[in-house]
Length: 171
Image (cartoon, rainbow, N blue to C red; front, side, top):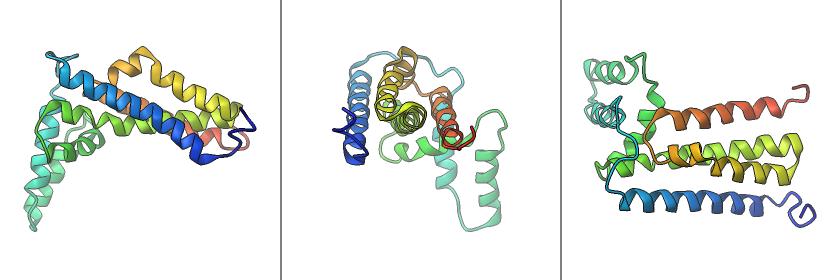
């Protein structure tokens, strides 16, 4: 396998894309066929995302409007704004919870590629691909990709921030 895939970035990208596509289609199918929410929105992430989108829509070219949007998005110290800002564009098309949950697809891609980078650097190409596949099949990761919570984005960001130190020579 090493000779077949030696530094062929297109084949590696294709394999990771197939894993990502499988999970994206699977999540879309489950979310559209499901009659109940996998996990209730106890901390109102969906409502907060809709409010963030509305605050971004209401920005006018005056200081009061810009300050109000900034205060709404960044004023809450409990919830990090990156999660809501990345999910807000999905609400432009359809104000549906299932569509917003598909914003986890971005974080799933980050998680897969960061895990691949860590595995490849530490143990080689095959381990990188295998580690991406295995992390995508963890039951918790598989289930959290269908829930609109910060936890999935946090897992992707931890993997992304763990990848650069693994590429250092003295790590």
